[in-house]
Amino acid sequence: MNTNPINNTKKPCICFGLTLYNNAKYLPEALDSILNQSYRDFHIVAVDDCSSDESGRIMQSYVKKDNRVLYFRNETWSGMIATWQNAFQRARELFNPDYFAWASDHDKWHPEWLERHLHVLSKHPDAVLAYPRTAAIDANGEILALTEPEEFEKCGITKIDRFYHVCRKMSGAGNKIYGLFRAEPLLKAGVFRSLTMPDRLLLTEISQYGSFRYIPEKLWFRRYFAPIGTFEETVQSQVEKLFGPVQPPFAARFPYIMHCVSLILSEPFDEDHPDLLSRLLLSMIYWESNSKYIVQEVAFLDDIMKKGINNEQLPIDAGLLKSVSEAIGGICSCVNERHDGSRETASALLFGVMLFKNYLSPAGAVRETIQLQQMQINKMEYLVEKYKSKLDKAKEEAAYWKKEAASETFSRLKLMIRKYFKGRHTQRHK
Image (cartoon, rainbow, N blue to C red; front, side, top):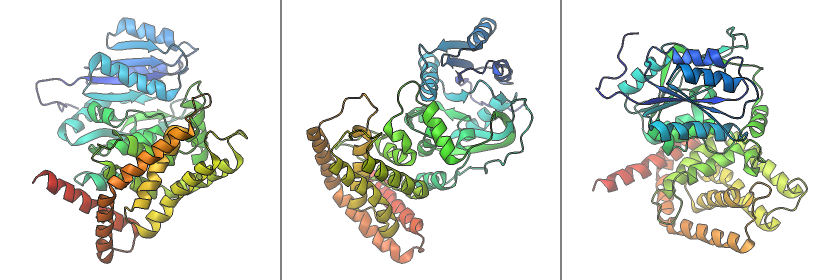
């Protein structure tokens, strides 16, 4: 391909964050496929999560023969999330890249992968991610006949519409996460949060900052070592691998509820934060889009509270915990029956923040006192009261739109959100 991916005189800074863990057999092939890109101006920042095989020796040999390669090794085994975070942070500290892509130690890249991705992102400055069609291969490099995720590319639509489509329609997060990102929005979206299914949450959050662009050619070859498991098996596998030697946080068992909470907490959360309502609405969209799983998580949470966590005393007052759980569960009925950004919905989501952010921490962490818990409850109630007028206004607008909109639940919610953001846009330009 002869297309120049960059039209301006300043060359972009590009980094691959290569994470390693005991895949020495496939590491040379993976490294060679990256280093032999047609567009050669980039760096590889490799982070080894304490591999016990020959990965370290192989990396040292590549460092000596190619100055684009840098190698770091975690002091102790840290797990996938910490290693992925470390790869991005090292690249940012050393090079402050314009573009960033994660890379694995066992997959393969087409020689024009980087050139094609740069061309797409330079042509579409509104895009935050470009990703290619993926070919599945087995341990021997043979093509697997797996069903490919549907193409996902939503451009020229509003932020809310894009967020809605990501929540409702996007599949194949494990493929898209290995695309090429603009580094700045990646940083804003939290890089890789310490939660289960962090790749899906990252793609959801970064969709607020721009569009995704799909490249229809097969430019990445993803290696599978075992059959794809069920959703439950995938979550359990992540709980075992993501968090390293520390005990997985209690909230890891509830990925979708935690994602809703993270969407609220992803920007400063205090009484001076002007976008609390918008964060609540985004969280509501995510909640309803994944209600099939969240209903199961709420039931699981309720069952755990009845039995206790590992038959041990709960870290907070059981009565308070039960009332909080009921508030979380109330989101489902509130969204599905009234569809209105009401005070009850805001309260339920804020109590969800309280529950998972502060109280069910990993074993061994310092437990907060009931007095502190009550102080935080009071603060959240204050915040809800402060925004009550805005929420009531949204409720009135929802009631108006309800007469005109179709009967489907989400179409009414979308109209309410559009009305809200249109009002905020008008106020900014007065």
